[in-house]
Image (tube, rainbow, N blue to C red):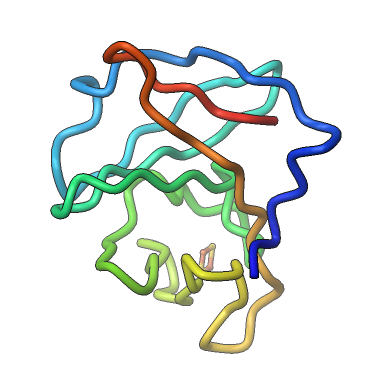
Length: 108
Ligand code: FES
């Protein structure tokens, strides 16, 4: 099940896939919305809101693995699967993201 509703979103090119090193995240603006895009070590892409729902921490600087993203400020964790926090915070908003001709495209 996906929590990303693509029926009301618009695709935005935010940068190049190479702008995001493997295993890391970077902040971008997509359609006026600040987003954090991650490229996991398996090459998969994920995107969230840029500000942590707990207290606004920079999620693009968080640590991640295949299952969760951990905010660098207070270490709350969020599941990639559905954005839910595994440590008691409000859920994070997820966005669909894909690669198209080397470009990062985020649906916001
Ligand atoms: S601001 Fe992200 S865990 Fe507190």
